[in-house]
Length: 207
Ligand SMILES: Cc1cc2nc3c(=O)[nH]c(=O)nc-3n(C[C@H](O)[C@H](O)[C@H](O)COP(=O)(O)O)c2cc1C
Image (cartoon, rainbow, N blue to C red):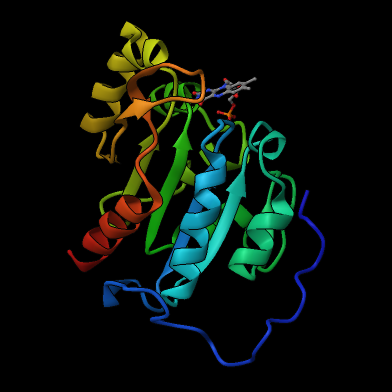
């Protein structure tokens, strides 16, 4: 389902370069997939940074992601409709997922859950995030995954196998970092900070 229509922007002037930004991000079309993890709140900050840098940000949320942060938050910060279902065909005569994938300059999935990594590694396309990703030609459009999960989940052989498969399939990765986790443990699996993901996005777009 698409969350309700976005309100008019505060100003008709497109904001750009309000943050310290690689110019490569300005006017780029960035698709941000958000999965269901605690660190979804950090992706709100990432959305804001990208929008302030002049990117056109389209946010896709899995059903699980909407349990952590509301679509309204991403809609407000991006100024664009948020996709929470694959069953909406709007803004284009093409099926939504094809048009969204084709028009993207960069796709980011942050946080990328253990489950989403497994789905991508096995070529599934049964939610709005993996469906759009299934239509992205990674020889032309970089896809950056920012995994986030508990340290034990990250260390699972299945997760590490999926990581290698996805790297081999041409996905780019940032993180996860080591540090404090929401499960009140310290270890590897923390999502990279929005500033780092933003910088990596700029680097990938400049390539
Ligand atoms: C409170 C809570 C926090 C969770 N945090 C994470 C997380 O940080 N990383 C992760 O991979 N899964 C986490 N999960 C599990 C995912 O939400 C679950 O695997 C879900 O099916 C992922 O769906 P998605 O990949 O479609 O977003 C969490 C679950 C709960 C209930």
